[in-house]
Length: 241
Image 1 (tube, rainbow, N blue to C red):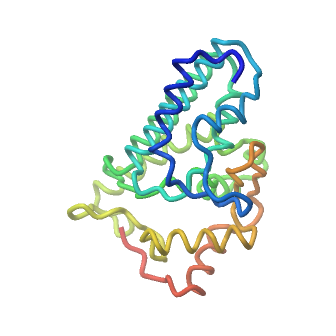
Image 2: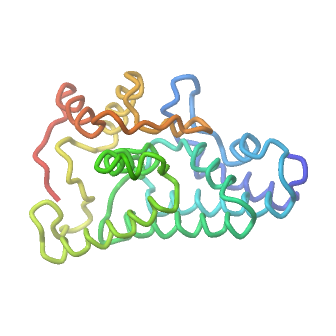
């Protein structure tokens, strides 16, 4: 990659083991891109050295936080997220974007009180599509990795923590090492992978995170469609915390 210092290149290459087993929902490729491949695709030799350095270092931070806080994550299509990070602006804006993503991962991941197992709903736009559909006139122009949506997720996290403190029926206090699953379908790794592969084949993923442009959609009831697909596949369960 033209203009990228060797130490940053080496740092990206060292991240490969964290992503090397990551699957992709893109039917045309066998796996998610490695960080060094992703950086080459996003930057494509463009930008000044300082912006490139901020991006590469930020990408490393994002990969590490996903690996640490969502270690069971199956699908690792970070293309659109990385593109949004690059397009955030100069080094300062890129660093700010990265900080927001890191805070969200720490707040929703396996070390938090929320203890969600995967980042799939964030990466592939299920949370975002549901949010936009509630007020499309105001929100349709806001993307899943825009700061305005990050603000919503921060507020949503606080709401969920309040529900947990009250031991809410849907978002109650977890017992032991279990993960939180408020959905009406099983989200064990084998079932999670199969369900989302079926949805990708049917073109029912809200955000095509494996594309640099994201090709995002909110105008279908993606949450309901996913639940219906899970039922057809025999993955239905009672929703619990």
